Length: 142
Length: 147
Image (cartoon, each protein chain N blue to C red):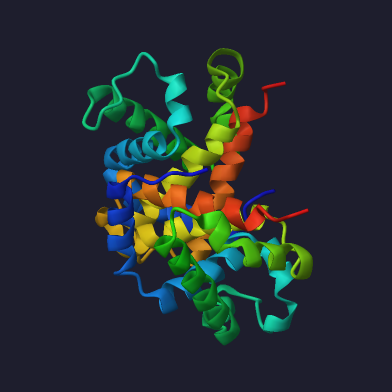
């Protein structure tokens, strides 16, 4: 599965808007993840996951920054996220189902912050892109 | 079986009262067909599904979306007995329509995205969590009579 040129254009252009609110979007995405899919919390026993926690904010920023890296290398996501892919495969070993939950929560956050930009075509492009990112992050699992 | 607290029922019902079922239904079904194009397999009779504008403007998509979302409205009135509420529809989707229940999960998540888009900041993580329970409950109820 790979992105069409039109899909890449949508993602790159939306990213310029998203990046101005990157930290808020990252934090909110994680808040949604932990509210809706409590099983995801099992990977963060060492974190304070309450709303407003500094750790939540820092981690949200990290996650969104990684998505940004993937956007900036949209023609070669695998190479941009190679280190992260190894980290998830050998160290973090987050069950792959959680990438679907996180991707869904990011889509919900984007829809909520950018109602006009998040057209059906944009929704499709982002769902596909996040699916590719998730695939890259789990491709070394076995 | 999914269980809703009194508070969850109140917040869910409160938000649902503000949903434009006609428009949101069409938008949800349209997005399903666009984001997951393989779901179009159930709608050969709907005519032009060749582009975003064709799908979102298609009157059959809008009409069917409205029907589906009205059903969701029933779910919200009967959150304590989703399986009972959807028993007949479950049999219909299995025996006559032959719909893979995975499609109910896809549509449920698309509906959550539509609510987020329409309600913005009001669609808090907590409200989303409650709605995720509703859509999961509905999907499971619709799959319950499959055999």
